[in-house]
Image 1 (cartoon, each protein chain N blue to C red):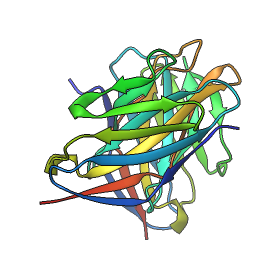
Image 2: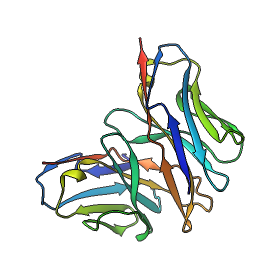
Image 3: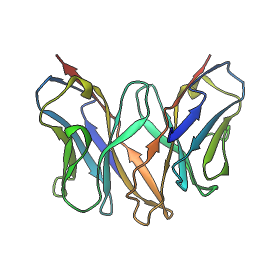
Image 4: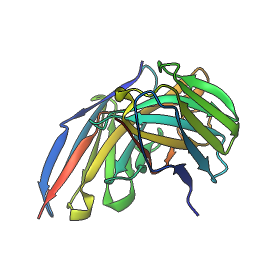
Length: 115
Length: 115
């Protein structure tokens, strides 16, 4: 009955590799997000999709490519991993509103370590 | 552009003492404000939110926050700290960006509860 799930929970890989993180939500939400949380706990939005359409694309290296096959799934593919990509990546989802007042529901996070 | 500032990256209180976590916001329009809590190795979960109704907002686990427009503040309080309150707390502001919700998080405050 998990609301927002992410796989894998931990990911350890070498520099230069390509990896993917998957996210699924069963809340019926239309909007999904990817956030990056660095070692100082700073949380920054990377991307947002609404009904499979990219709506927020922050200043993120183009090595990061999100994909939303349907509105319940949002995956993140990272090419040519670098040391600075080490962080915890959170997926979140919400209902869209006319006002922007809805809460976001977060997944448990994927801790990525690049060696 | 919207932003939030959380004063104090670390706050320590004794068990049973008042908890006060400070948050000031900047927004060009009436804001929607949130407090989220992150327990170790978990995702964020909503504590409470302000959406322009009552200025005193009650949340889960005995927390509440007061919206003060004149001070551009949304401080989080709890009358009596429990050991289980030890966590990272994030203040966030939301508005509409390009027609969709965009949330900006503060840098977080780590709450330590001393027995």
